[in-house]
Amino acid sequence: MVSIIENYADIAGKIVELTDHPTRPGYLQMKVALKKSKAIEGFPNLAQADEGTTIAINVKKEEADPQKLKAKKAFTAVVKKVAGQEYFIK
Image (cartoon, rainbow, N blue to C red; front, side, top):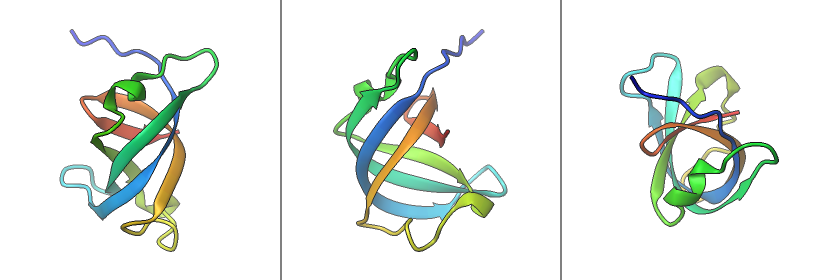
């Protein structure tokens, strides 16, 4: 059984690409070059281990702003890590 840790982090990075999610209908998958992460009080910062790598962030299509989510743009958000280097926006 996989144990899930409730976690959140405030991240900053640069969008590498944005595509339809390969397996989750209704979601986009954004690849972000993660520069830094900051802990949210009361929660572990699991994103810290992924700093300096490219992570995948899942975004519901209806919540995505196409003007802000473009390749090579700076990106900040509060995220939750679910597995590997896969995240969801809080």
